[in-house]
Figure (cartoon, rainbow, N blue to C red):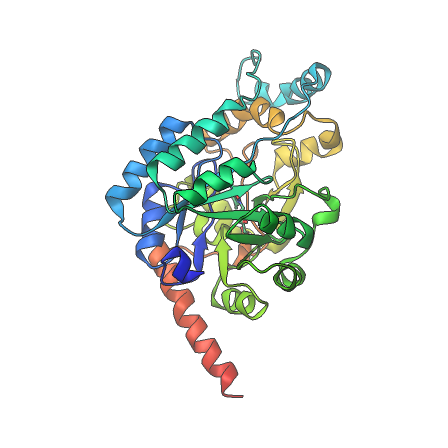
Length: 353
Ligand SMILES: Cc1cc2nc3c(=O)[nH]c(=O)nc-3n(C[C@H](O)[C@H](O)[C@H](O)COP(=O)(O)O)c2cc1C
């Protein structure tokens, strides 16, 4: 995998949509020998193009773009009305006006994103929430772009391999943020990384990238022993100095422990793991009646942005994985350096038994 991606270390910084993956973070990871990845799922084609230019000014090493395979949500006016009703007291607290109508999800956005990736010849393109059309996978591969899919079960990994993906992320239930489940439903796909990685590795011939709860050298080594050829880490990079996560979000990450993350659909209509707060508690009772992703995500956008601007941790999403207690401050290069030296130390001590 490191040869195919032309990287020194088998460490991929997860594409994290919504702002954490700044050009500075991506370039630092790639310059330190890992693979930086832009979380571009929510970005317009123009913003992606701009970010690619900025990344290229900061590094000549490979990096990737992570995109969301579009879904076909049900547009249900009644659910939208009920969701806005539930959100009204929060909007009042934050002095936000009643929302106007939100735009329907635009399926054209994904195709525009794809064109930018293809035209910019970015070395790696990763997908989550499903598998893109065959034509897209073929076009990427014809341009020499390595294609990575996401799986949360062995069956999803097999589907990724059949679709021509060059490698697949095996994403355990410890992972922060939204997971890529697309075949068996959310409940059935809550498999921990320790159980998922070897089962996926046995079922596919393409390289496996382990993700979910991997925070340090111990986690990286364990993932490699389980049959992965690389790891993808999200939460561990969030508190790095180059990350775009806000100050309060970073503080919450540094202060929280493993019992404080939970799964919620309240923010987006799709289950995701984040730090417990008032918003999650308030939406808990009705979260299975909310509009589909990404409609609910669009409905809560004004609230999440206002809370972030006010530095209010109670009403914004603070995605995090279960490895949260292991987060430390520092630069991305420090984190990668520490991981590599720990992997060397631990493997030596294990071999000396
Ligand atoms: C803040 C945040 C945002 C994320 N956004 C994305 C995303 O846009 N695309 C994606 O494929 N995965 C996303 N993920 C999941 C990561 O790719 C990765 O699987 C996960 O972070 C691994 O678990 P860890 O957080 O315990 O390291 C996100 C994770 C976090 C924490």
